[in-house]
Length: 359
Image (cartoon, rainbow, N blue to C red; front, top):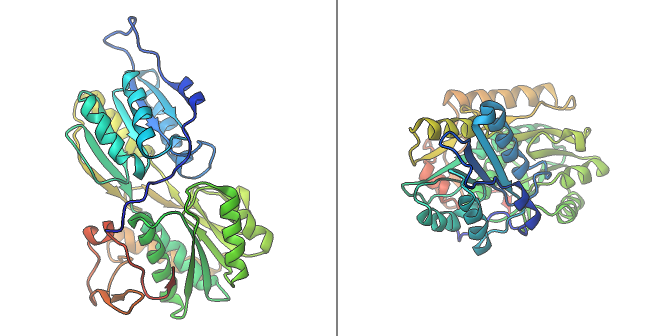
C-alpha cells in the first residue's frame, strides 16, 4: 500500500465550536440524540465537506426534534483532529462521523476514551467495537466521466488535478483513464499533484498548466470549483467533483460525480436509536446510491451520452467492472490478468498507475 498521506488538511476554526450542543443538568432521558460531524474543509466548499453537511441536514429533516446535530469545520488532520473529536464527544454526542482519511488514528484514539459513544470514520480501514468505517466507490463514477472524455476530447488528452497519492485518488485516476482509453486507445491522462484538498488558487493554476500542455478535458480530485472556472475561461470542458458544479461553469461543466451520504447517515442514526447499530465496513457505489452522476451538459454528444449510460447500467447490473484485466502498469508489468476483476483488497491498496497515465 502506498504510504498514508493525511486526507484534507486545513486549520481548525475555533468559531465552529459555537455549533456544539449544550448538555448539562437539564438533560433528560428522552433528550434528542446528539450527532456530531467533523469536516476537514469549509461547508461552503461545494465539494467534499459540503456533501457531508448535506447529509447532516438530511438527518435533521428526517428525524426533526429527535436529533441534535452539530459540526466542526476546517479541522486539520493529524493530532489536532483528536482535540476536535474529543470536544464533540465531551459535549454529549452519542454518534460522531469523522469525514476524512487523516482523521483515522485520532478517531480510534478518542473512541477508546469514550466507549459508550459510536464513531463512524469515512474512507479509513481501522475499526473497533464502537468504530465503523464507510466509503464510496468513487472510481465507478470516474469510469462514467472517463467514457465521456474519451468520446469528446479532440486532443485525446485530459488533465487530472489530484490531491494526494492515496489509493482512493490513485484508483480514480486509473478508472478515468481506462474508460477513456477504451474509446480512444491513444488517450493520455496527465496528472498534476496539488498536494491539497482545497486551495482554489492552486487548483486553478493546475488547470491552466494542464490546458497549456494540450489537455482539452479537465477533471479533478480536489474540492473547489476553481478548476472548472479556469476551464470555462479557456474554452475547454471539465467535470465537477463531489457535487453538481454546473452553476460555476455552465459551459465547461459536462457532468460530475456526486457524493450522496444522506441515506447512509439516516440509516446509521436510526440504528443507534433502535439499538441495532454495530461496527462494520460499508463501501457503496452507484447501485447503492452513494455515487451519482450529475445531469449531462447539452454539449455532451449523443454517442458520449449513450456510452456513459451503458457504463453506468453495466456497473449497476454487475456486468461491467472498471478494473477488468488485462491491465498493465506504467512499466508494462501485468497487474491484473486477462479476464480477472480487481478485488476490493487490490483496489484498497492501489499504489500504481495504469499504462498511459502520466503521473
